[in-house]
Amino acid sequence: MVWNRIRDAISGPPTLEGPSQLPTYFPVEPAGCEKHAEKLFACLANEATTKARDMEKMGYGKSYYEDVEKERVAKLQPKKDDTTAATKIEDKADIDKSKLPSPNDNPLDECRLAIAYYKRCCDRELKKKKNWILTEPYRVQEE
Image (tube, rainbow, N blue to C red; front, side, top):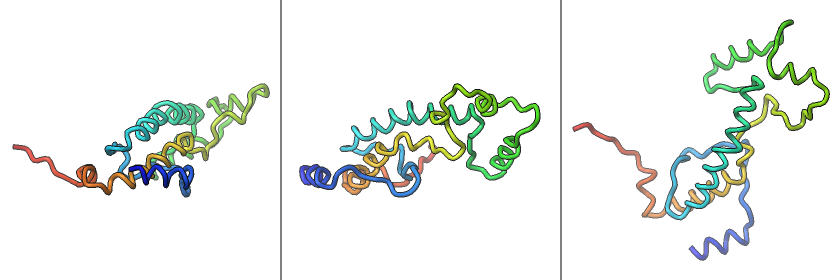
């Protein structure tokens, strides 16, 4: 445990490669990673959720399913009498548009550093015997 702290201090803060996304083992909270998991959960509950809601209000919400995404894009095509939040804001000149979400924003970018720390800690701690049960698939049988 001490060696891991020394190695972390020397290597510096972790970085994520590519777009921000949660690891496949995400809601797991292994022993030893409680601090990083709590920070990530708090960030997801506050900053990322707020940004995702703002994107939905602007009409930029994305779907996992392709057919729903195609329908959303078709609805986003501007019409003559379109009154979405995005078109209302474009008409006003006194609003700072740099603070508004854009269609290609990722709400998880708000928690990028917390995701990196959580991933580094979980990758290390899930290999230990005390945390193996968290990664094992199991089945619940009805009696």
